[in-house]
Length: 129
Figure 1 (cartoon, rainbow, N blue to C red):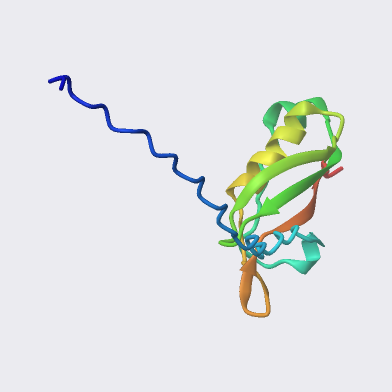
Figure 2: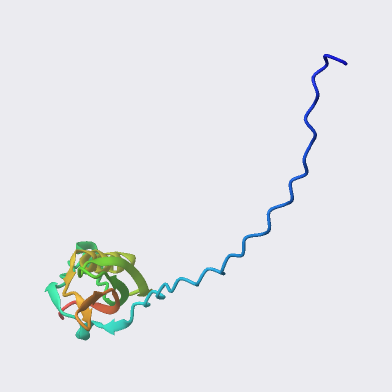
């Protein structure tokens, strides 16, 4: 007899049957509610916009109406201020946007829940004759 070690025989292992898993149920994530658009008369103010007439615009006789679209967040702060319609004068447009950025709105609620809303804000610059 030989003193050589005997190698163990390889024993075939049957493959594991696949584990059946139930498909995951889709998680219901509510779609975000798009902010609705309100007119300036439909919102309240804690601190309304008070645009300052730029002195150079006053001296140059610049007048006009600026229309801004403002995203008011749930706390009543202007989160975005977009220029929808220019007065035709960049100084007046910027003065209107700056005033609206400083304004504070009353939070808009829907069934007692504060919601962000878009507000259309016209700002008029008129020189008295």
